[in-house]
Every structure is written in structure tokens, then in C-alpha cells.
Amino acid sequence: MSECTLSTQVRKISISIQKSDWLYRFKMRRDLQVACVLIVIILIIGFFAPDIAPQNPNITDLEGKNQGPTADHILGTDYLGRDLFSRVICGLQTSLEIALATIVISFIIGVTIGSFSGYQSGWIDNVIGRIIDVFLAFPSVILALALMMLLGSGVLNMIIMLSIVQWASFARLTRGQVLAEKNQEYVLSAKAAALPGWWTMTKHILPNCIMPVIVLATIDIGHAILTIATLSFLGVGIPPAIPEWGSMINSGLPYMRIAPLNVIVPGLAITCVTLLFNITGEGIRDITDPKTDNEGSL
Image (cartoon, rainbow, N blue to C red; front, top):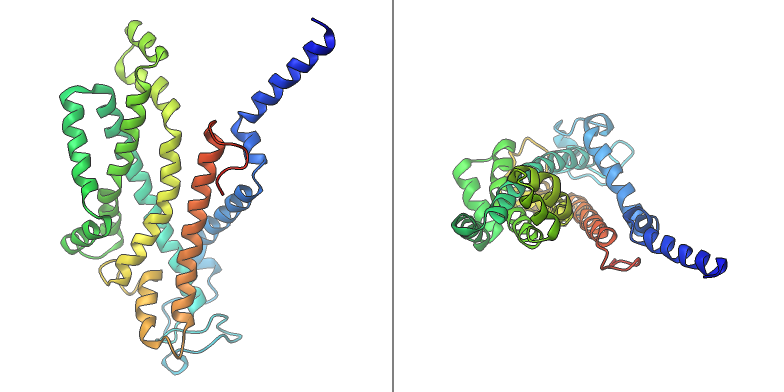
């Protein structure tokens, strides 16, 4: 084999390895890079919301209610004269805190139960699978409404309720991934070597099937924010004293004609943040799935 031919083959292999690497694919995706930067900015704004907000979001001024944008209130005021921009910023913090806490709890519970079910098989898998099906059979909003009526409003109750609603989707996906992975040769070799089941699961199976679950978690952050806003809009979520986008839309509806920003601004905030997390989740799926091309689905 000539030196030129060998060099060409080595170059092809190197390019193939690069294209299969998620970091290389990430560098090829400008849209995903922009989405990730915007997500980081949103997280920073949400974390430092009380410091960024120009005014106290709960200070009322009935003489200046339902005003349009001014120098003191860049997005105007609501029906109680509270600064709309400050309430939107603090509402971002409320939504992110509840959504992130919910996804972390649901992720841990769902991955633990799903991996255990898929690895054990037999009657254990059948029982757990039917329990997962029962939770997934109920429409999420209806189940959330029923649980909130039972638990009552509040941030902690909202986290508990959403975790109960969300864990089943993580468990189902993890179970399916484990079932597809546990019959691979490397898993059978680990069993033949008499390695403990928990070791085989945590060191061999989960690292090879966890990425789709992470993608689901990223997308579900946006879904959790949307659910939080829906429940607060219906009046069964966050107490009125806490700034939250759904309750802001609900309270601003009667004044839609004279102060439309009370509804438009929090509505756009919900749309943009949910869309960003969905785009980021789909982008992560594209760059980590070797079956997709470099262009992705965005």
C-alpha cells in the first residue's frame, strides 16, 4: 500500500471519528450554540432576579395602575400599580426554581425505578410497568389539578405534585433503554464475571442509555414551566403574593383592552423560555445520536 493511500485512509478515519463526536457536532450547530447561551443567560437572570429587578415586585401604587411604559416602569404597571418588568423577572425565578427542582426529583425517581424494573424483568417488571402505565394514562393537567386540590397551593406542594406527575415518563423511557441494552455482549460478559447487578447497572448499562433521558429532562423543563403557568392561571398553583407568569396573565385578563402588556409580556416570557428549552433538548438529542446528521432537526 502506497504512503499516499495510507495517508488518505487515515484522514478518512480521523474525519469519521470527529463527526461521531458530540463536541464536533455541537461546534457545527450555530443555532444550538445560540440556544445554550440564551439558556445560560436565563438561568443567571432567574438566579439573580431580586438584584436585577429595578423595583420591589410587590409594592402597589393604585394611583399608577395599568400604566403604559414609562421611564420608571419600562413595561408599565399592572392592575395594582406594581412594576410589570420586576414581576416578570421575579416570575422567571419562581418558575425556574419549581421546574428545576421538579425535574431533578422526577429524574432521580424515574431513572431509579425504570432501571430497576428493566434490569430485573419478570413479575417485578410487569408490576412496575403497570404502575407506570396507570400514571401515564391520566392527562397530566387533570392529574395535576386533582393533586393540587388535594395538597393545596404553595411552592413546595407544587414541586411535590409535579414530581408525582412527571416521574412516570422518565421511568418508562429508562426502562425501555435498559431492556434494549441489557442483552448486549458487554452486559452478558459482566454477568458471566459474577459482577454485582448494581455495579453492572451503574457502571455499564446506565452510562450507555442515560442520554435520551437527559434529553427528555431538558425538554420537560419547558413543559414543567408551562404546567406551572397553567395551574396558576386556573388559580390552584402559586399564591397571589408570589410573582408567577400564569397568575399574572389571569389577573391581567380583565384589563386586556386598557393594559394589554399585563397579558402579552408574561405570555411571551412563557413562550420564549419553553421554546428555548425544547430547542436545546432537541439539539442535544441530535448531537448525541449518531443516527442523525450534522444538520439536525432544527
